Image (tube, rainbow over all chains, first blue to last red):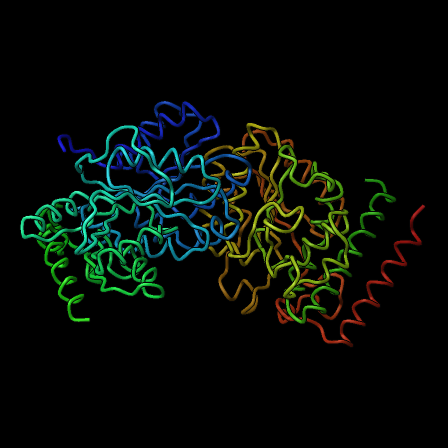
Length: 315
Length: 281
């Protein structure tokens, strides 16, 4: 865990690399190319880059038209606007006809930092995963982001990729495997399973190490694809550990926590403690301060793990 | 256009209108008013204007049509049926549980439908996306908007985009029938003058008569001649055109005729068909 890289940065570079390999890839942005990092693609392939101006709803439907005519459009904006403002365009123009549009939204979650609540999208996973046939990927680091971008381009259908602004630790090594719909087990334990999505993975791993120091043996699973969820892995973790902690930089309603609860409740119900933003809006501040303020820190995950184990004992 | 050709188109348009009325009657719901107002435009597009092949509806080189006012689906299905993509009998299963003919166009299941639409304002944007590809691959894109639809902000986002990217292979039309669900467009939300508004957004704008094939032909010809801007045809139309009791009546925006009304409409259209038939040389 030496160098910190933002997933948006990795996205921009991967997209430019992909552009060189696949001439059907086109990129759309809504006046945020510098922030979403689609700028790298724009500079390399100006003829295949279309700035839509500050008009995200139009951008998503334009992407739908491009896909209907055979292109592989990647459309980027901030998560708040790509998934939030343009939700109905994503649902009706992209989701309903199951068009091959990749929506890559940056600046998700409270780690946007100083811009505050209006720009800190905490609802996008919930919104996107409620659309039938939509794939939702929330990569945890720069390496996985690159793989997600290439996997999304290979897959024929709508994909939402959730990316962050903050530079975060690089956890994976080049060449590690990534498959849409599959989670990765980082550590196998028997007392509690910590399932994390997105850039919370580093805190989840640190929490597992801290738990180990107190004699608690925790599994750690990275779940980049929130939809379709790797339900097999979730259920086997539930059976193995008897308690689950979910960790996400998203509202605890409707995100990974909700998806995991849905997966276990019908087949192997176990306590699920959800670490995330507790159904509130974000606020301005430094990303690191906000992670602690909103209860997404290592100590919060540790506390949730102990709570889960307690609940398990009381059943 | 010579008279015989015009009469042939009128025959096709009349059968399209019969198909619209029949499918909406069978469904006991749907949007006859704005379907009938668009019937002649769709007839001209599918029989004269667009480079299409009903035998090869997914040809990547084909011209595209997007029905941005998706509630006029009965008109699109009727025009596609008349052109041979499927039968009128199939299209008349509109809105029924086991039918592919959804209440609004569904590109996944209906041959010849180039874009799923229904939520207003989105089709024109999708048309812009297609036109970007058409510039490279040499096909044209046609989009039909409602005048009420132009109250959606997204229409104007798309209008900016189309002129910014000089989408001269894009020809959009507004079916200017002057009525929307809650009443006259002028009273509900006055979007006039649409011609000046689109012109100020950088479009090549022409006003035509949506029920006169010479005027329609003129509009599409002028659209093809324009090489540096998208074209908007403001198509003056009559809501419910062809069924006298529906004409210019807002209540026929979204309601189906009863049995007697259906028979009256079919009798009127049959008479019209016979009179056109008599004109054919």
